Image (cartoon, rainbow, N blue to C red; front, side, top):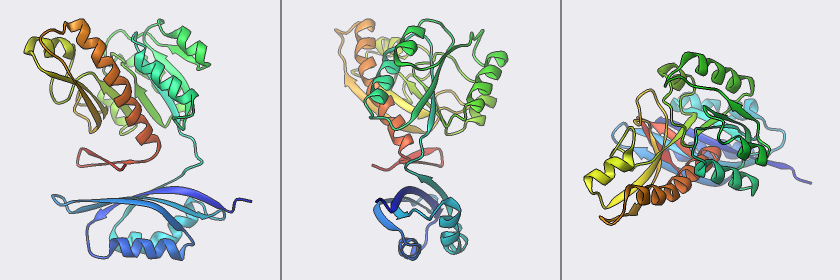
Length: 285
């Protein structure tokens, strides 16, 4: 009979001597065992960041664990986020007409490689309805007159809140959200941009890359913010191109990178491997 449960604890606080020792001791006193730990110190801002994967008695919950840790939380001005690994995050995928990123996410989820519940697919077009139906995912068509369309965003937000969505994935959703939408779901929206940011931000990046004659193209997964393509970068990938490649060929090559980069970013978010600090995504492997 299993007598243990597992949790991930994300920690950030001002850096100082003895932090790891105090955390380890506090967790030991709470009856917890550290299964894995990774840490990083931002020397520019003097901030200590750590991800700790623990096992602990079934009698523990978030409230009791926080109570055990409260003395060091207060002493070291810690910010702590606790998530139990048996909790399933609820995901909504936004798409437009392109299906390659959507297909990849749905296949990974079907095969058990993404630990989440894909609650819905939301699109400003009807084109991908059949794909959603094939995978048994509810599809919501919400026409969008223009980026930041308040009527469309009202419907989208209502759906996300009604279904308690934890993460929004923009799988080539070709619309820009309003500042209000981006702020409401801060650090809960992952976008895939089809260039190696900060190069070629905005629209038609493959066309921009072709015109510049670059030799490398890429894709960037980042948290969406009110500033277009300026959010914390989670993951990037590149592929070599040459003067022989047409725009069409560059787009084909780029799609392969987009799939893998987005999938990695989503998986790391679901596994609580990311802490955003100073507009940078700290990703623990």
